[in-house]
Length: 147
Image (cartoon, rainbow, N blue to C red; front, side, top):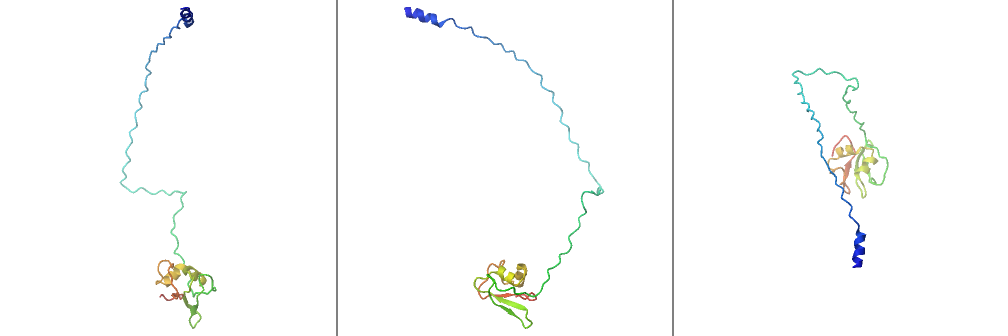
């Protein structure tokens, strides 16, 4: 019993609870501002006069392209990818080239100083972009004829 009396004295008196009072107050909301109504674009019945802009230069069309000079093929010498024989006519102008193993159309064009697009035009029998040439195929080097 004594123990109960001792323990009861330890508990002490409870602290009073704090009471908080909250009073809500309404804050006035801002009054909405009206959204402006867009004005319609005026309808133009006549073509407006063009006012030159000094910051923009006048546009001038490109001049006609100058074609590359076309002439006889020139043999720059055998090279990897273009090691086959070339045939010349009686005047000494190169006329044809025979494809050998390891040749590439681009390298043949380089050897004879002819643009690849020109070589393709001169050789319509070469399929694609010249990627499929075959052994013993005759490539035209004479720009005045088309094979």
